[in-house]
Amino acid sequence: MDTRPALHFDDVSFTYDGTTFVLDGITFSINKGSTVGILGGNGSGKSTFAKLCNALLVPDQGCVTVFGRHTEDTTATYDIRSDAGMVFQNPDDQLIASLIENDVAFGPENLGVPTNQLRERVTEALASVGLQGFERTETAALSGGQKQRVAIAGVLAMQPKILILDEASAMLDPQGRRDLLDICRDLHQQGMTIIMITHFMEETLDFDQDIVLDKGSIALSGTPQDVLTQIDRLHELNLEPPFACKLSDALQQRGVPVHLHSTDAGLITDLKKLYTDSAQDALATSANPSMSKEELQ
Amino acid sequence: MIEFKHVFYSYENPASNTQRHHRRSKQSSSTAATENEQVANATWALKDITLTIHDGSFVGIAGHTGSGKSTLIQHMNGLIHPLRGAVYVDGNDIAHRQAAIDARKHIGLVFQYPEHQLFAETVHDDVAFGPRNHGLPADEVEQRVAEALESVNLDPASIGSVSPFELSGGQQRRVAFAGVLAMRPDTLILDEPMAGLDPAARQSFLDLIASLHKKRQMTIVMVSHNMNDLAALCDRIVIMNHGQIYTMGTPEQVFSDASSLQHIGLDVPDTQRFVQLLKDQGINLAPHLYSIDSLADAIAHELGAASMPHSTRQDVN
Image 1 (cartoon, each protein chain N blue to C red):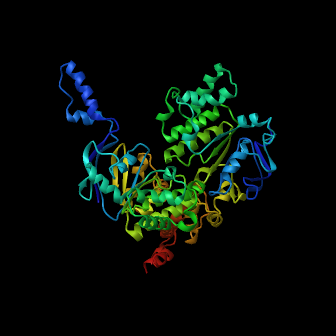
Image 2 (cartoon, rainbow over the protein chains, first blue to last red; image 1 turned 180 degrees about the horizontal axis):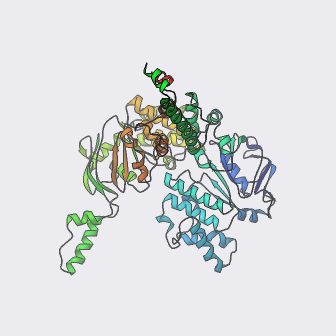
Image 3 (tube, rainbow over the protein chains, first blue to last red; image 1 turned 90 degrees about the vertical axis):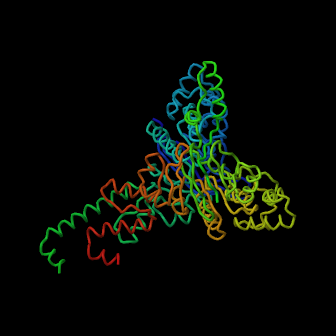
């Protein structure tokens, strides 16, 4: 059993121009098999963070390790990139072949996977993203959401342990976005570590951990329930709190005794309980004849 | 005013299909496909669309990918023409070349990810491209560039000489937007103007569009997947499904019943989704289009009304 963290940032700083630090002294660990949301507005350092995860960039200070391997160790780059697969924002930028099977096979083929296993890998990867039987379809004929699923399949065919999604849902329609999240949930069930970089808070509601970046530093970190209910802080960070949080805040202001919730389900549970209690109170009141008389007068 | 009258459009040409059909059927000596068969057999991207966009209105268009939204808006300034039916702009059928040219002068179309179309070396030249192309005199061009950049909250003096490619995504989109505004359109057609922007950039872009509508009385047609935005801004909403109008009306009419849109797999505004969740739990609120505040009021009222009759009545009064 591998007990090393899937990903560890130790006091990591990075600068593109030598003067402004895009990331400034970031330290945190992501456990194997966990789901983590990396949130932040434009310019918060999210995308730089993503590129540091699989040695597309190496830190100027501090170090990044992927299952214990240092990203600045160039002899480990190969292994790191096969462990940590990345999906980017624009599906059109990521597909390179005209047939889906060729596109999905590209990664593993380059890793030297024998031809007889390639077929199996492609079939499995396509099944994982709900595109079984699409091997011979042309990539050009797909919708944005389908293309993004092919991009994910291409990464899965390399059998990574960590899947990093860098705003992978930003250009998708609501259905495409839901499909993408469903795929991530399935992969997580199978033990995949998921790192989702996004500015849609709602996408990370059922994750294990959320990290909010601001100007290259960690502004907030914790469970989504803890992070996403800090309504004032999120507004300061130019982020939009989830709907349930805004509504529970509005209800609290009106004296309705609910907790601040990040999810619809949590708030519904509170309201349901209040409603049942109040209905029983009302029943008790109407069952009490003396009370009713008073009311009549 | 933009009017669609029984508009049909197909990306495959059904007439040529029919001809093929015809030739084949001749060989088998049967009759040619009738017009009705032609309509039935084609794959229509738009099918019998009739709608009117009044001057000064704010119309939202929503629907799945592939529902015909983009095809619909490309008809509005004559980029594509109906195969059947007609589109009239201010009473003129824009299937006629001159009418389409006239329409384009006052109807600005902003495509998805308009920043992908930036090309000039400086922000100034990019925004000036349209007015120059229309042969306007130099001083008029300068004035329009300055005015357009100011209306998207960019400072012409400091940003004019910068390469558009050095700007952030949100700023690039503003520049592309300014390029359309420099033509001084009275109608703006926007295809998912907020797609891919972060929450802060989204909000400022929404504010910008709302102010163009309110302050300059511009007619706005906005395609969006974000039902919260549509509910907040639009006078009327058109929901497209399989190339047809699924439903059309005020936000109140379209969103009051969440289940009908959820039925075709579309999102509804967050508030309406929550009302539906409450309903599933036996908590029934009056059908209505809610904002977060009015929804909180209604829930507080509903809970209060059941538990504390006296205090609630006072609260409501």
